[in-house]
Image 1 (spheres, rainbow, N blue to C red):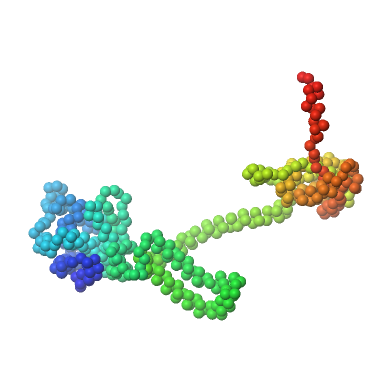
Image 2: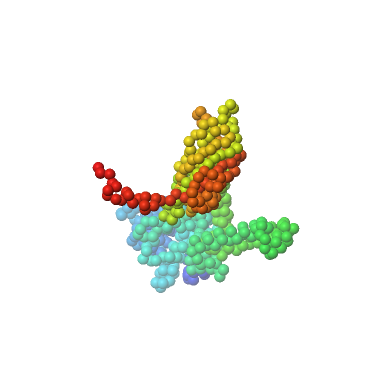
Length: 501
């Protein structure tokens, strides 16, 4: 049975002409070793050791560094003879070579040079094939670079054994391949290793591409299957005609839809795995479970990070309302302008705010038997807070007749100026009313009161009456601050006007 299986599936696909006699001898050896395996471990190990020495001698792949595992296999020397462990180093005995080899493998010595090389490679593959019959341990195999043996990607997987997976070593010199008996992921000459312990010829549907591209194709297939699953949810939120018709049709047949989609997704996944030579169904399930396990482990950290980011978003989105609720909307915490940092042009000029009088002011809640001691406080953008003097015993109406200068940034049209009418107490001050104006409104008041007048005096014609919050009125005017004329600066430039030191 082994002779027929190996002769048909392996050597038929690789076109290696191996005589039935060689296969018969190999099958007989395997049968003897399998019988001795349960009775006398030392006996079948010795037979296996001798068989490996014979194959190594016939294949002539020197140096065949070692085949190790649970078996105490010998270290083969780079000469035609093989030194065993019992020999004790250079003086040890040589393995029987020529006569025994000619008797056991007569086809080997009658073949031509190309056929002999094919037989050598075949015997080497057989060594790798029979090891899983006896042990599950990993073993190493070293071959010479001069042979360019790129067929080492091909392995024979026998019934009851695990898969072989190569892990190339990083060491220089002769190429070393570490075989682990777990899986096979490569191909050679159109022959693939599959999980069912069979060798299949290269099928037309299989993709001959690198492993990385195969991984991306499988990821894309998984995303596509997930998208098909979510079609009712996605189309239900779309407003085009096709989505509406599909949603109205599928929502009455959800049980049938998900049954059909489940089988369709399974077909898509299995077909994708079939055409990818480096993937199998159990490997896909293994990585899928690993991904789900990793997701659940990191789910807590993910939720914590998302909560922190969402909290920062809420703070940024409702920063103005939060500042208003805290009573800090008029305070500029960071006096920084990104326009200045990046060198953009800023249209900033000084203006003067005139205040004539305040009327109908409410009484302070901290004072019962005393009139209001009123002063005005102003906050605007990057300007420092400005305050007037305190007007003692002003009550509900006060003639202020004061002014202060501010820098008006016309490039920031949404900047706010806040005027507070406050009552000065013994230790602290309390707010009576306030007025909030934007840059646009200040420029509008300037057009009415500052740019159209020829003379200025504290009268109703030169001021604008504005409503305070929550109650009261204030009269203000805005005037631009012009630079001094040349006639004012001229005396300072004359030598006779300078003071002698």
